Structure formats: structure tokens, C-alpha cells
Length: 263
Image 1 (spheres, rainbow, N blue to C red):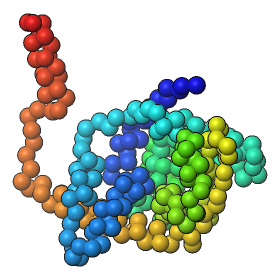
Image 2 (image 1 turned 135 degrees about the vertical axis):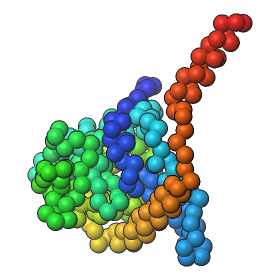
Image 3 (image 1 turned 180 degrees about the horizontal axis):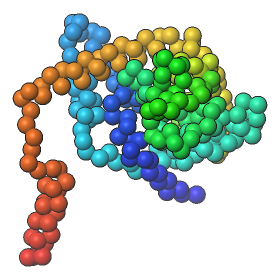
Image 4 (image 1 turned 180 degrees about the vertical axis):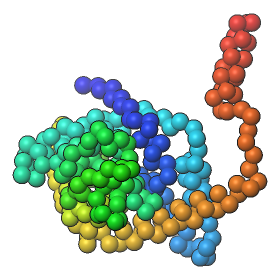
């Protein structure tokens, strides 16, 4: 059966992620990081400048996804519910469209052992002083464990299960969870694909298993801040435009419509 998956995330959540480095960006920038290791110390990277330019943009991000990406988002709460039915003593609460920040890193949980509350909004931070989650003057109980859900399509689901645990791409994402939330003891990973031969498959990761990934992420966060600082140092020569991209685009559309009417 053909399925036309479509999903739309929260725009405020996308905007809240712009001042931190996220797991998906770390994964995308990993090849650039490895290239930088071969360069002289202190040399900056065009790839990191491109990432910073995207994150500093005031353009409204596109919240829509389709196909496999949308499917993954839509299946996540069902995956967490299925986990809870299989392991009621290790229950998780599904989390969505919220980012937790700490030291320049951002982590958007799929599920934690504490519930997501409406008043939390789209972003929380980790309080080093109180060792808990906080938003403005409100504090929340720290989680002790997390679940990461991977809802790949059958071919990638099975390919993911065959890859040895020590070689999985998901390790970086799990390491971000440990770095943002020092209170968590372990992360359960659930591969979830209802139509697959092995529809549910689980693994557990501890902080000690991911020491190498944590070192890489620590280095990448430093690089991210270095490139952000360099961009901000150029502000003295910056000017404010008289037009916005939206204004220019609307005028362009009106001109195209006027030309079409003359034909």
C-alpha cells in the first residue's frame, strides 16, 4: 500500500534550536571536522561558517517534511507506546517539539522517564546550580533515563540492526543526550518498523561506552563557538538593508503575475 506521509513540526521549536549545535548538525559536520583535524591548529572552516550562517539567519525555517522523514516523526509516539506495553516497569513518556540546552548543545528527546508539560514551552535548559531542568524561574525534576526511537523504513531498519553496536551512526546522537542531561544513567534505543521482519529491536547505552563520541562532540562545540565569534567580529562593517526577502519575493511574484496578464 502506497502511503503519502506528511508531517509538520513547530516553527518556534525550529527557531529555538538555532543558537545551539544539535545532533543532526553534528552528524552532518563530522566529515568537515575530520578534515579540520588535518589542518594547522587555529585554521577555520568554510563548512562551519556555512552552518553558522544558516543558524544566524532570520528566515523562517520550513516545518514540513514528507516521505521517510515524516514517517519517522509520526511513528515515534506509537513506538514509545509499544515499548511501554512490552516493558511497563521501564515506562517512557513521549516528548516532541522541545529542545533542552546545555553549554552550546541542544537535545530534543524522543522520550524520557518524566512527562513533558505544556508549560515547558519549546525549550528548557539544564541548571548546573540545581542539577535539574529549568525554564525561566520554573524548575523540573531531572530525568534519569531516555529513549531514542529510530523509525527507519524496512531496508534501512534491517541494515541498521546488522551494523555492530560499536559502529552505529546513532552513537553521536546518544552521546549528545548524555552531555546535555548529566542526570541520565542510560539511554535505551528502539528500532521500530511495524512492517519489518524484526519490527522492534532494543539496545542500551551507558555514558562510559560513548567516551570517544563525547570527546568529538566537545571539540565540535568549541569549533562552533569559534566560528560564531568570528562571524560576530564582522558586525562593525555590517549594514541594515531597506528590504526584507519577503518584500522582494512578493514584488517579484506581482511582477510575474503582471507579465502573465499581458500575454
